[in-house]
Image (tube, rainbow, N blue to C red; front, side):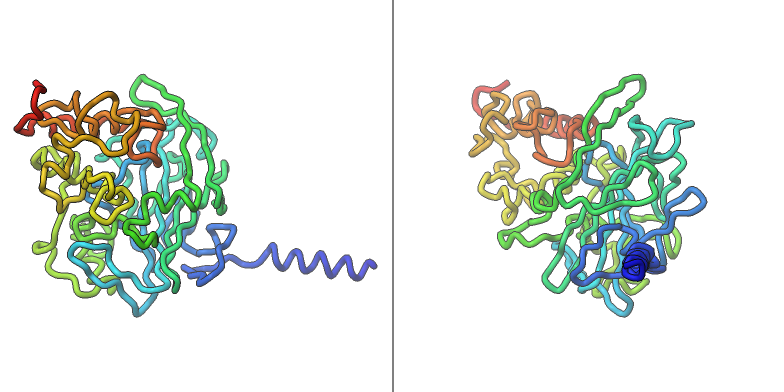
Length: 379
């Protein structure tokens, strides 16, 4: 009996004390319980840093997620590359891992992960993410993986523990109470980590219901960002390191504006904002295509953008307004209303936020106010 007990303890130790991978490790079918088993990061000297082969990137205009900061990074297997596409998501090979870590800046003097108080930061003061995250001033919330397997893309949400030492797979999602500090104002909210089924709400971008990355399109990546080769264009960098094939000179590729770039036109900034935040659903092929409201960058018909268009299935989400978009009148436009409200039954996007993106709403209001035309009796 004693011998059997010792053997059982030994087996438990072997399985529980197995060495973590020292490099990025692709799992073709298994979904490890711990993020560590993917071998993506090192945590040492107060920083979480990428392992060799994991390349940080940023989007021209990022999708809003309750003011969370995001560290985006991608790994492509050695000797393989994604195929460039001028309009659609790049075609990545099996073995690709995309990691997006959501985190917040915390008040000074607070131990990492020990505070529910998180601070608003402007995009200009975001940590670049090129060399990782300074954990002394950050609260790590979750790391979402998109993994390219033989059967297609799969999404896996990993939630960080309070000690900021490990993230574990939470297929059913999680709810994390936080207090958001914006200047002198504090707002309590619940950060929602999506379950694996909810991922399809944004990432199933066509009729096939297959998941696809959102950000890996030329127009979202066509910008400079620090990393290998210096602060250079990201399409150029991905091609230079062998992660992307068939890419043109970035000067000839599509690009979206940064929504907060005051030197760009209001229209280009607003359209970039709607493209990244809404077009994965609201497009000719997206889940919301039946609404007839298409908000992707390629759509130029104001009617399809909602101008003087009655809603099809908005329910009480209309805010008692008649049209999706009323030129010159954001206060009468359903589009502006749904971006501004926090009511779960009315807000857009339907998932991924509990807070209102004040800067984004202000931009969309400014854009609508500048549009010419009328919808009959308004204004």
